[in-house]
Image (cartoon, rainbow, N blue to C red; front, side):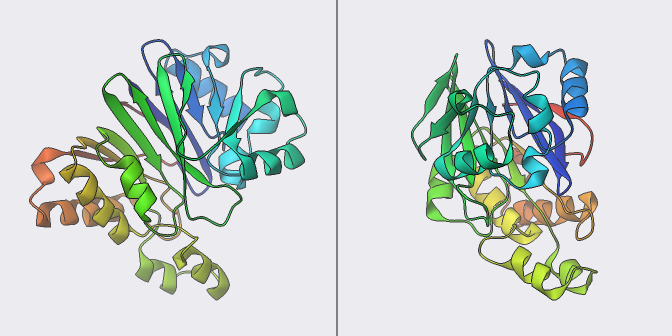
Length: 260
């Protein structure tokens, strides 16, 4: 199993996970043209995608879905809350095309086992995903206001993960965002700072993760070098820097392939 980030940032998110006999997308937050072009560049046609899993319904995770569904006839997976919101907002999504996920109950997509888990974010039915193929395990945990016990339980023991490193708190407080937006991002249902991402990274490497990709970086309130340095410092302080490959996903380009 391997994964690619087709985009990862506050302006758009889409991830391809490719197993031996199945390929899935998580989110469709960039244009249909970019999704299909970037899939082709790594040897995947849209028709080859066995399912699209939606984390939540903010535009940077679904803005390409309306046009994509004019071409894509496969299954769309989301929680009950996110699914209801999708049906009200994406007129090209047919009700019979939507599969509703129950948190922490896996579904099978060919040889991939996908399990959604609830995440604290200000969108209905927000989820992260744990994906397993055979003995290999991968997780996507972004758009988190905080780290809750269910998240740690669901992603501990993965071999690779995409973790949110959205912002530097000082940069956010001193930056151009209005106070109300700053408080939303810093709140329990907002986004993870580099520092909290570093704490979670230490937990995951201690439980066996060998590849961590930092994602969903804010363009205004973070920088790839800043996110990497903060998380790397947490890993070094814990004596774990030699046990993991730490990378930062490009905001608007293909990253990978990353092995699981």
